[in-house]
Each structure stands twice: as structure tokens, then as C-alpha cells.
Length: 248
Image 1 (cartoon, rainbow, N blue to C red):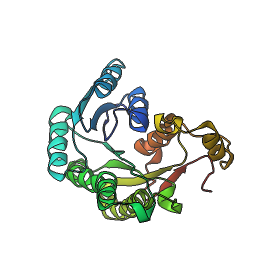
Image 2 (tube, rainbow, N blue to C red):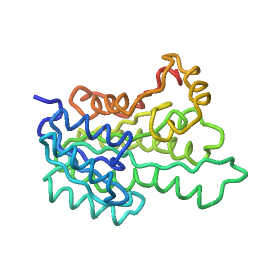
Image 3 (cartoon, helix red, strand yellow):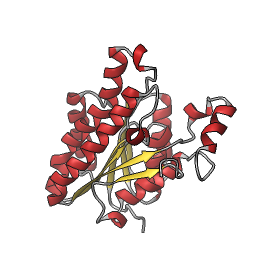
Image 4 (cartoon, rainbow, N blue to C red):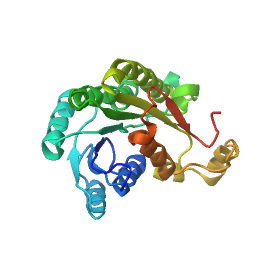
């Protein structure tokens, strides 16, 4: 029997990358998967097909995570389709990196809205569902730069630091109903975006990491599995770094 048998997870921004890896890992443990992305593009529908091929219930939903009304609507649809939500993974995120002196208001607002406001939107929408169930696990995707900061990422760092404060506060509010809130702070993770970097840049990053390698989306997914499952039933309000020691 899988670690997430008979559970339903809602994962935002899961068409590809880390979100998709989490969806696939959860599905391998028997979890039904509802997931969102900004649009039902070809790669999103392909992810849905891959999940269904694993023998679990899965459905993709188009949703702008930064839009409060859309978020409320999609959560209502998920509950109607799946009956419950046991795990919420707030993974939707974007970057618009540039030096603060060149950063526009649009670049600031876009990153804060997608990365931080979306966490409020989905957590707010899912809270009544988990409250009625008297339990649930909310996993928020932060970053090591939300802890230590990073040049040319003031907007991204601020959004990820905000997620940590939100996570700790929500954990204190909702623990009374056995609703756990934790954050994951990934470090240098190998994705399509980081693969596009010149090899010497990637090597320079890897040399700063004690484990001497970039992480994989599956590394992050394994941490998410722990937080989603009953293995972490006494863990809440925590930030777990998945960074190969980069931020130790």
C-alpha cells in the first residue's frame, strides 16, 4: 500500500518541472492528483495523460494562481470532482530577475502576485475543506534565496521569504484542526531553465554545493512526499532545505 493511498493532492503549476515531479511521485504512492497550470497546453495535457497511465485518478485544470476568484472556482471544481483535498502543494512560480535599479513595478508585482499571493489564494480556498476534514497538509515552495537573499532577485527573494512567514503563521493558526503547513527551500535544481545556462556557470554553482551536484526535481519531490504523508504527522511550521548543503 502506498504512502498516499486514498488521498487527494492539489498541486499548482504542475504541468512540468518540479511540480510535475511532485505529481508523479505522489501518484506512484497511490495519490489521486488534481493539478493546475496557467493554460491547458500540450505539455499539461501530456502530464495528465502520464498520470492517468499510472492507474490513478488525475485531472488538469486551467487556473491563474494569482487570481483570487479563479482560485476559489477551481478549488470548488476539484472538490466536486474528487470529493476532498488532503494535500495542497503551492508550487506555482515565476522569475523576472534583474538588478533593483532596473526593476520595473510590473516585474515586482508579477512575481509577488504569482509566487506569494497565489499561496494566500489557494490556502484560503482550501482551508474550509481541510477544516471540515479535520486534517490536511499544505506544502509551500519557497527557496534558499528566500532565506539568504540573492543579487538581482529582490522580487523573487521577497516573494519566497514571504512564503516562509506565511507558512509559519498558518501552521500556528490551523494546527488545532490537524492541518499542517510546511515549506521546502530548494537550492540549485537542474531544470530546463538551469540547463540553458553555460556549462562554466553551472560548474561554478556546483562547486559551491557541499554535495558537488545540482539537485533534481525528484529530490524535491521526495521531500514533498515526506511532508504530504503521515511520516511527518508531527512536523509543522518548518522550512526544509533541499539544497545539497548549499545553505547549511
